[in-house]
Image 1 (cartoon, rainbow, N blue to C red):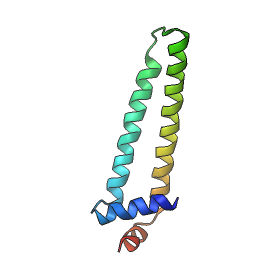
Image 2: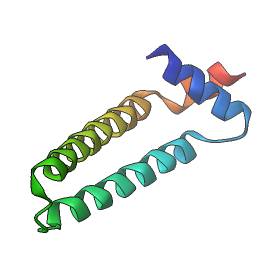
Image 3: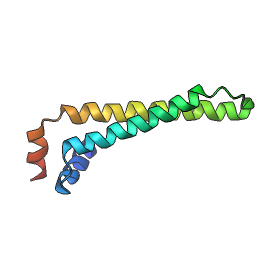
Image 4: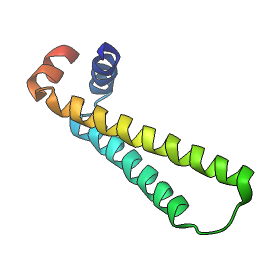
Length: 88
């Protein structure tokens, strides 16, 4: 995940903090969860073709949620002093 560290370093160079990066990821998680909940709670009969599309969209959203959560976990594991040190 070297690219994540490079992204974090570039973010720091542009005065974004680790917390701000995490806040952005939390926002993306919230948006994806909300969208997924909306799709899952819709009981409209879409027919077989649109139902397949609905299932694909739900799988994509679940993938993105796992991805964003793993990024949050990874970024949280980086000590703040390492982030600051790398950006100097």
